[in-house]
Length: 257
Image 1 (cartoon, rainbow, N blue to C red):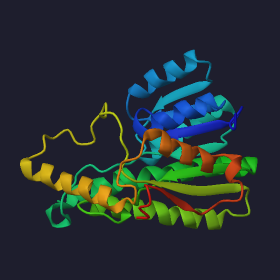
Image 2: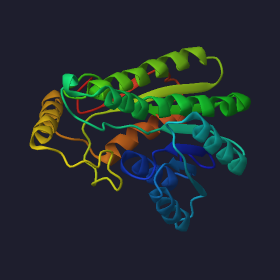
Image 3: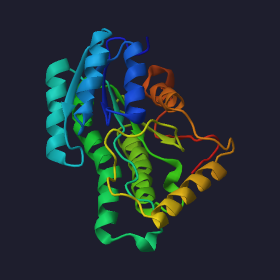
Image 4: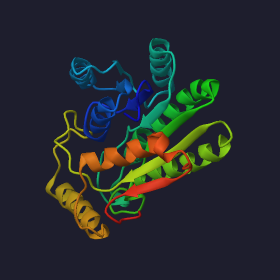
């Protein structure tokens, strides 16, 4: 029960790593603020509430500051505090050689995988500073070194940099900021695809190159599980990691990114 009575916000909570993290945190006593752009976040909240979790689900576009700030303000008004933030929004939209990306696609990749973390940190910090304590875990990726995802890699490199910089800036405030960098992770088919376009044969081949490189780069030569990612995230979020800040932890079977 590491999170008994602690208020934990999880963005991108409707599916994948975010959902797994929410389910595990609920079992450890967390009070949960779940934020996602998908309506499926309400279904997760209803399931957790039936099991006894104190949970609030909100829909918000976390790529935009106004929507992000309002969601966090609503959550803090409801719970009265914010102890932990898991910034989980992001993910590759396209997989292709960099020369094949259109300029607007590059901008969308960066907006999807960098700005929600920037806005999430900016929204959470004032509340944590008032309390004099808090923990933030940003979800990065070992794909900062990888093929066919250069804009995504750049965005996640930004996540690593902001994690280190914010940790240094607020090191005397009682707030710890760390990141987890997942490798390839087995997950159910997404309820809301990041890219609804039907891939061409060429695009399928480019994505297979991503899979092949991911498996080759991992010393364990396998994908991880959702639970393996959530375990690391919740460790860094918890007081078990009280002497750890400014760190990006690869959880990728030995791939350091």
